Length: 478
Image 1: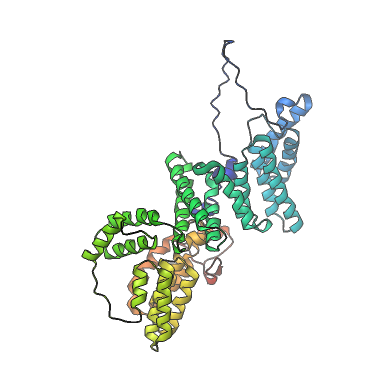
Image 2 (image 1 turned 120 degrees about the vertical axis):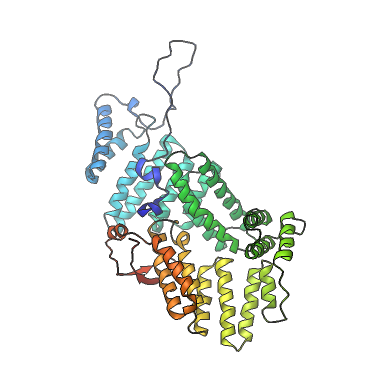
């Protein structure tokens, strides 16, 4: 979706200010004395109605002129007239509010056009004061906190802390519940994930907000209209994926979460042993008890359709049992114990790859998965599977390193394709799978216009940030 990706949330905010409210009040005169006259709430800020003579004319003219200069791209002139409008009549006509976001966007342009740290600091402070003034004039503190949190997260993270940004975004959810403003959902989800995995937020609170985020997305998709639905679709591609990654946190989600999600998956593929075993293990991970009907159903399906004779007593037996019961960290410990007790490098490599796959598929810890995949590759030369896995890790990092679409999420395909290419060059046995993955993900690379916009060229070296931290080669999908 081109560059809009990461600004998915800006939607109405950058281009058309605050969410629009349709004014259904008519100017028709009702010829009766029996009905009360409906009046707009009185803003505490000076409006056109509070002015007279030349002041009123100056304010109204300034409102028109600054908009014209903004459209023309003349930021300096726009700012001059905007300051006049803002200082004389911040309350405008008592209803119009867009001049606050317009002012914030003007100062954002000025911020982008200078590298002077003191000027940048002052511009950010001014932007936040403009938002506070809007709150003073028109209220809706939760909305204003959401905008401030959004700006801090995407544009000015160095001028605050993740905790302060998290609390600003959280206040929007605390007040509005499932009607939270759409632009807060993705950044709040990212910060929620970080705080839970870093142990800065309890599982109980994290789970409560995770459920609220999912309810907000469902409500937004069900009630959206027109182009606003596109924003909710983009949000739906990112936030649930980040929340799903919290399955890797022990005791975060409970039985009902796993039962609802994985029993439904089993119903779609009732004859797949892979799905049956996955669903059964996930429900056990959620501490579902034997009296849970859906667990009993899966246990029966597992016994009938997926029976495997118990393995002979071996080093890996405990790891297999732990894994099948959804005890992923114990399974990892068991397999690593096998590595320590083995003198066979090839056997060690297989155990290490098992550990890497658990970290990828089940615990959702990509850096650890890569670590063990690389250790496995070092112990067994000419083996492509570890690099197939690392390629999958990179390709799956779109929601982790970006918002699911756009530049940050597209460029992870470059190192992914590097890994898959390396895998097939090392190991002819994985050639078919590697080629299928490469062909599938070529379409998700940035387009020529995307790299041109950033003054980049195909063939240049490019460093991928986020957790990947590798240099790759710029390529395009067209």
